[in-house]
Image 1 (tube, rainbow, N blue to C red):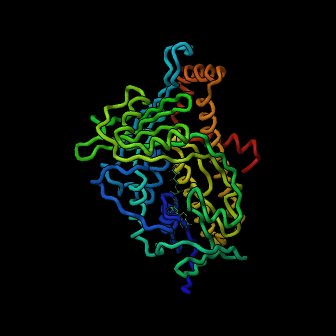
Image 2: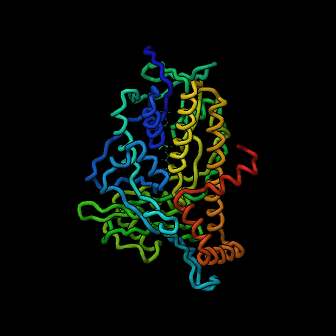
Length: 419
Ligand SMILES: Cc1cc2nc3c(=O)[nH]c(=O)nc-3n(C[C@H](O)[C@H](O)[C@H](O)COP(=O)(O)OP(=O)(O)OC[C@H]3O[C@@H](n4cnc5c(N)ncnc54)[C@H](O)[C@@H]3O)c2cc1C
């Protein structure tokens, strides 16, 4: 059996795990990272892949800091300057004529609210930064068969007979985290009755710089602009609907899917030329009971999941990376043991509160807009109009849309009496 030891061993080479590896590699940690699958590289000339994310300014700053932002091809970055949301209500249910809320980047003194980018392009750029680090080892793809937390060390055994030990083991292995489950950390999870049907479509005109979302009872539809490529224009369409409907949509042929999209999306949807790819995903909201144990920490979807209606999931994961990396760098400078649970707790507390705050905001929006109750409808109507008319509220909304939940997090911290 081959035996190796590292300062930090990261399980999961997704966007979050690989960003942490680069951050720590930049700061002279001896890091190993392992995934059960081989990453498939993707050329910038290829049509857009299915999974995309709205990358907010905080995440952009992190990707710039680790040198990955400049490696994402320009023809794969789609900036957006405006976010529009509205509630689809029959005319007789509207209290006001203008039922639309819009947030612009200049409200928060930014050029853009964010960028829509394919997950694979973000991941590939981060992985390229790892090529420059002799102190980061990407282990051959393998599945973990055992995980142990001893007094001062974490260790794993893999199917290809590697025995790897580390002062700190980080679970960045996504929603079904093996690390979280086998270390005994609990999770509070709610499965949404809604699933997400998503499609990348080729459209007849450039997608523009506005992302929009129409809320309608159990039928929320959204448009995410994607970058044009070789004179072809693309967008990512999101449709949150019942599990049965989402799964039936994903099994239809592309002509039937196009008909369904055209019948259910608002009229401002640009003309669709063809469906490039599509799929359906279950949705849940979750938070691990704790993000750390001695010699172990969780980041990204392994620690929390959020409804994607506000496009915050990976952005929250990148904030975990920033917080955990700074905590470890400081501990190392002070000559402390990076696996010490007292040190890891300071990371876990900060991120638990911030992620709870974001999850609560997103869940409240979900509840408010997926509700046929007349009181909810009235609150929505009034809320949209009041927010639209008060610049201060619009500014908070635009900050939230670009991933800033600081105010809510600090209020929660005070309530929970955490520092
Ligand atoms: C429909 C949909 C739309 C979304 N839109 C957005 C958006 O607009 N903006 C946004 O910020 N977020 C969005 N998200 C959320 C976002 O996709 C996730 O938060 C993000 O991908 C999580 O990244 P991660 O690196 O933590 O986990 P993952 O991407 O799941 O990566 C985990 C990695 O761990 C590996 N792994 C798993 N198990 C093991 C194991 N046992 N051993 C070794 N390796 C393992 C996997 O192979 C994978 O490479 C969306 C999610 C969905 C479902």
